[in-house]
Image: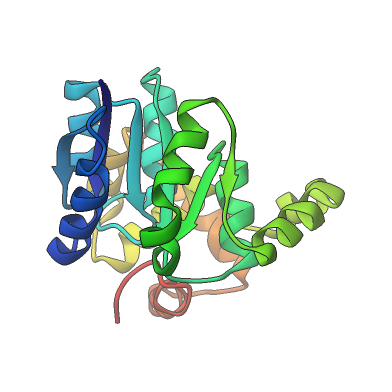
Amino acid sequence: MKRILIADDHEIVRSGLRAIVGARSDWIVSGEATNGEQAVALALETRPDIVIVDYSMPIMNGLEVSRRLRTLHVRTEVLILTMHESEELLTEAILAGIRGFLFKSDARKHLISAIEALLDGRPYFTSVLLEKLLHEYQANKQNRADMLLTSREQSVVQLIAEGNTNRSISAILNLSVKTVETHRASAMRKLRMSSTAELVRYAVRKKLVSP
């Protein structure tokens, strides 16, 4: 029996995913999370084969969930769900080691295929657009990595935009306050920003948080 963990902060989305997964007699939903921190805790507790996680999750986004699971040596594949077609988002996912990426609009048709691929050890990226972006990324990997915020910097920016202090961010991400300050400064330098308000506007624009 394959165990699937579902993480999304909207009940209607979790319900739809639960129905699709439950249609398979050899799969079981091992837990449901409403934020990234809870997703990590449930993954540690239930040890699922697959974690389906919304990119735009409170506290920890989907990429940070994947990073944390790898750090904790949880042997599971992560399938990111998102509403947004974004070259930057795909690149960030690949940098975070994620091998499954699916638009929410495609979930009804492609979720089972995506899970089957990951269970078989194969990556799954939906749509011709994503295949094109993946090819472009692989051709320009170093340049893209230098241009983008790291996954950890993105997570720090998200948490700042959610109103967290450096000290609370350090507790959530299990980092020292000094390291959080370093990531914050690095993100602001890359984005050429000088205030928290600018970071919040960036986070809203990039869909890291809801307006």
